[in-house]
Amino acid sequence: MTISEIPLQPQNQTFTTTIAGTIYKMTVVWRDSCWFLDIYSADSVMLIGGIPLVTGSDLLSQFSYLGLGFSLFVVCDTDGQDYPTQDDLGIASHLMVYVE
Image (cartoon, rainbow, N blue to C red; front, side, top):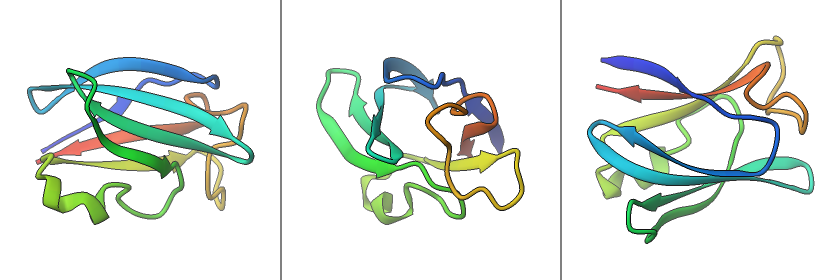
């Protein structure tokens, strides 16, 4: 079991990351009042689009049929905060990856 943070900044961004030995391309975008995550394969095929970054559950639970082999969670440093604000993503709100 491994838990690690995917480092983010409070700005729209696209990056690659390796999780459980697989390379993924991810895009994080602020839309209206929430951050959203898109996950692509290394060759830019969209796997999952438009996941709102909110606390409280595994962001990938409804996509278990994809067999990605990991879970994503958002945690905030402030008690009771349900989602990252436009200005605290990666600072006081964190995207965590859990690999068994």
